[in-house]
Length: 315
Image (cartoon, rainbow, N blue to C red; front, top):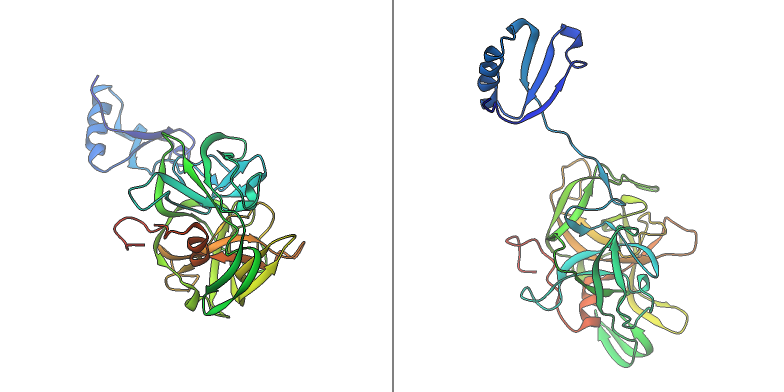
């Protein structure tokens, strides 16, 4: 027989209230064709309701396998489970497609080891570590400060190049159904946020409201509480880091930090400004989050990474 157009579903349960069979079609134009087919089959009109019915919305979370890989989704490596920060290129927009996550999400923090990343953490290989600068010693000048330092970096970040065939979307982060403050947010993905621009250190001021989206605690919001502080770790120093009261938990390492364009949570946010990469916080204190700025990441790798959605801005 002929085709009547895409049918989204046929349900006796949905039509029980009216004692009819409900047949769903994707668009109004298909209704007439469906009725023609009904007549050809000899089915009386009183027995059937034909209506436009939306297709199924397949709910996925930040910990699921992503059909299109973007920032905010879970990834795994030999070092454990983390979050993919943001998509970029290995060198300019003509370089190899790549992504950034936290350096400590690799086997060797602040050093190249060539780890393979999976998505999700129990899924398929999507990329391989390509660069993770070593610690340096010497004089430095950054964000209006300067000095001397031993075994230092400006970011906890590593670069991985995508495997051939992986579908990715440049300049996009995973948007979820709702945000949290002082606790977990939602992790059900409803679409992408598009990166419109970068948020540079001069705008990362105390009191600035920022967001993060990570595989464990989802979309959460908070304010900057400390700027450009130095973190002294075990045998290294991270220069000029930022602190906020954004909620984050284990597994959120590598998550993107960003500013929504309007800074009003009730607004349906579409475009965002990327600010940096989450890497940690005080042990057990989920309401304090530390992150590296994009400028610090660029400084460590000696290049300016392209992060924006194509056509929105040249960043």
